[in-house]
Amino acid sequence: MLLESLSEGCSWEVLAVASALQVRDLFHKPRGSRRPQEVLDYEAALAQISDRSGDHVTYANLFSEMDDRGVDNERCKELFVNQVSLRRGLEVRNHLARFLKRFGKVQALGVVDGDGRARSQAIRRCVSAGFFFNVAKLGNDGRYYTLRKRMLVSPTLCSKVNSDTLSIIGSEYIVFGETIDGGVRGGIELRHVSSIEAKWLR
Image 1 (cartoon, one colour):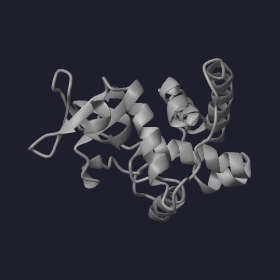
Image 2 (spheres, rainbow, N blue to C red):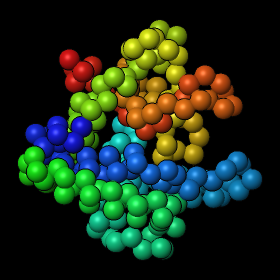
Image 3 (tube, rainbow, N blue to C red):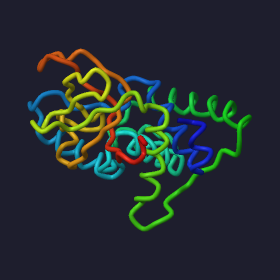
Image 4 (cartoon, rainbow, N blue to C red):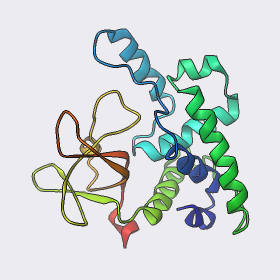
């Protein structure tokens, strides 16, 4: 994933993604529905940085936001971000950046078009290059199955309050960072999920 980012010219963003995958609980998610206003505030905060494609670009957006504004306690509270996890993620990113510089120029792609679509696609192409074994396809029954071993899985967006699946985006293929035992629903749940295009896998 990191090596591919050198070719795509989005190493700084992909370093943020790699770092986010190394920390736990990057977001403070409101639990339950006892405080509906807190849930609404959380969703409004995430709307500032989230990307419709899923978690990976959202992580890159979060790190970019913190690069621009600094990691201050007030801003982390506004965005429901776990400041300790974020600081650890930034440390990991800096360490990985020093390592990656041995292989090429580390640079940021930035927003090259009005809506950030090209940036989003470049990041997700890199993720696909690194995690191509971790891909699931939408079945005819509206559920996702891994390409390897055809196991039924439930995508969970880390940056959402509820377990929203990416089928609302209409993505035929998704890439994921890890699997966990599905507690409430049973089965296997996916974390760190984004939509991808089939041609990227080819």
